[in-house]
Length: 258
Ligand SMILES: [Ca+2]
Ligand SMILES: [Ca+2]
Image 1 (cartoon, helix red, strand yellow):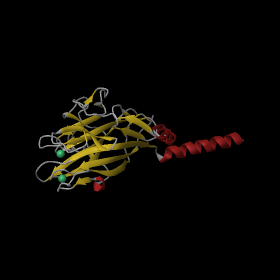
Image 2: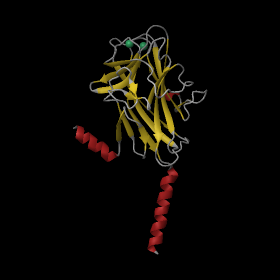
Image 3: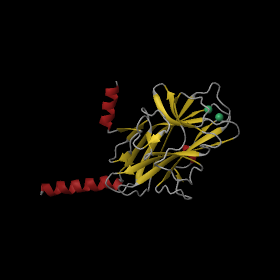
Image 4: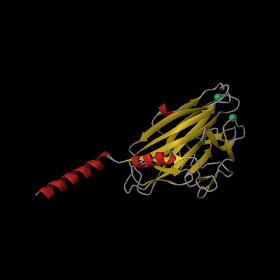
């Protein structure tokens, strides 16, 4: 079955990268990011993403504001707490099994950690040209076991310099995921599929775009748990690129007919 799925994905041109690697857009096929091997050791990220950790050149967690803080690549922020099916209390980064066999990156916030907070993914443009447009899809999960309400909102940046305005909200507020205030009894992982497209980017060959998931909460008492899985990033070619290719093909065909 696994082989069949892999074959089907291969036909579709979908590249699957483990979350321990780098995310490099080298063509216009979707890149699917898989947290299957993530076990949230402590530290939960390191150089190269070895031993069940994520690659700290690719992923960074930040505590503080969601927009005016630069993602600190090359360090591991937050305690790695290992794997769990949810219902934790210690703050830090977890590999949550949000559904049987499905590992996700996740965290538990407390007053001094991740409230607000953000996870940032660094994506490199290696398409050979200027990257103007990308689409992003993911599944956001919450585990509503506590009395605060939470919110997850996507942002992006081309600079990651942490100044005001360096992180912008991606595609308006309709991408928000909200966890309810009143805890579910019993709590379960709730999935929310989201996606957006960024246009009018200007990412030079070799440069990066920074995709951020920002978290915050309101109310009083303890905070819900959050997780991310099934992230897909796709570079989209400019409409003109295909048009020009088609035109040049047509011109070549006419030339050959002469
Ligand atoms: Ca909890
Ligand atoms: Ca809640």
